[in-house]
Amino acid sequence: MNLTLRVWRQKNADTPGKFVEYRANNISPDMSFLEMLDVVNEELIKRGEEQIAFDHDCREGICGSCGLVINGRAHGPLAATTTCQLHMRTFKDGDTIAVEPWRARPFPVIKDLVVDRNAFDRIIQSGGYISVSTGGAPDGNAIPIPKDDADKAMDAAQCIGCGACVAACKNASAMLFVAAKVSHLSLLPQGKIEQDRRVLNMVTRMDEEGFGNCTNIGSCEAVCPKQITLDNIARMNRLYMEALFKGILS
Ligand code: FES
Image (cartoon, rainbow, N blue to C red):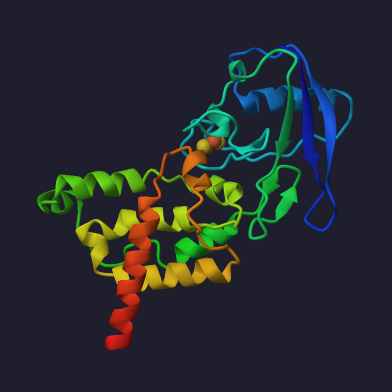
């Protein structure tokens, strides 16, 4: 396949960026999108030009490091697929493909296609964990958990924190991400103990980081590579209100 790429190049957060056109020639349809970018970078190195910076780690769809807006859609045209798992056979020979970084104020561009997603880490640090002693695996297995709760918790736990939800949202809302973490922990008995403090702290931190609010558009759910659903946001809002009222009444 021979393709034309329009890639966002930006030196750093303080320098304006721009699209630069590159040719991607002799690309195998079986390459992943990131492997295609590797080929383009090899050509740039041969020509003595600066490589395109992009984030990646596992390249197996599990770490959440990769994340590109491809032809205007976070992670590209395929549903439930991370950028690293998107294959070039999804495109046609001769296509022109636009490649951009996540665009949201809380995710400043570090370079080219790489953005700073530390805001997510700070939200997790504010409460996305269990600090009480939960015992070992046999203790956990001895606690009966309703199948429905276990299924919902495991579905929420699939969130890999890639940030596509933020990139797709017109409000740059991080509520799908935060709701997945809150739901995952609060649906299980071990996570219920710190449930009120967790949801209050994580939502407060999310707001402090500058993420917007959810207005029920649903773009986040549409682009989420792990198919995290909007009902997690409803659950988080419910838990938040409960915690707030308990605080007011106590
Ligand atoms: S590189 Fe790990 S999810 Fe894509």
